[in-house]
Length: 141
Image 1 (spheres, rainbow, N blue to C red):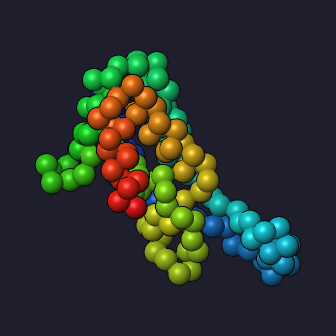
Image 2 (cartoon, one colour):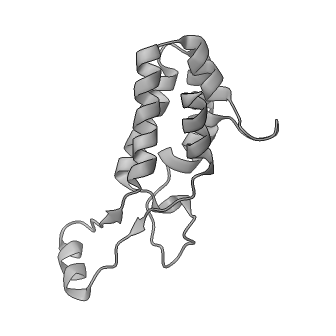
């Protein structure tokens, strides 16, 4: 039940991460530091991702990992959880909110992306089904 709730929360949680406003003086400093930018990190999402990864590691059940990786909370036409993680959190490229909507996946922080990749890795360890799903997603990229 706990993992079901966590996966449901991750699925329905809107993107609340965004870049912080940058002043002109600060902007000049940032340009000198290889264009690094500050993000407002959704600590709730990062915490959910890390908690799910830790639970799957502790339980270490291949059948459970397979069910979670393929599981979909919505209709049968909806993609599985691994696909959702891949599309929504793991490989989104950070962007600028002024050019994109607030719900865009392109505004995710490095912390969110790393936590998502860690969860995906946890779901793929000793689970061939999830590893195949992830490989197919990477190949389709």
